[in-house]
Length: 100
Image (tube, rainbow, N blue to C red; front, side, top):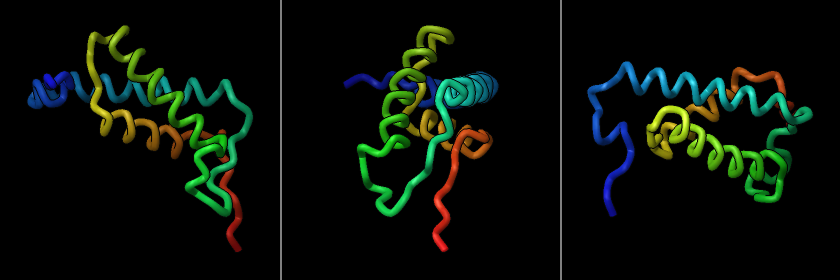
């Protein structure tokens, strides 16, 4: 299997990596706007049918395609994951269950 991730192929090109990651994060935030408020993990964070978990899988695949199409850049799974959760942290679309 060939290495395809730009981060691994050219690790010193930090300006490009940062620009792409910033755009991916914006991409996620824009996609979140398409959904009503999303409740974060309830009693079972491993419920793979929970809306948040289904959303994660779909948006990760779409973001990878967007990145290749827009930037001709293959983002690593780690980059996509970091950008997704930074976007979740910045978005007002997520509601966390009260655990008290």
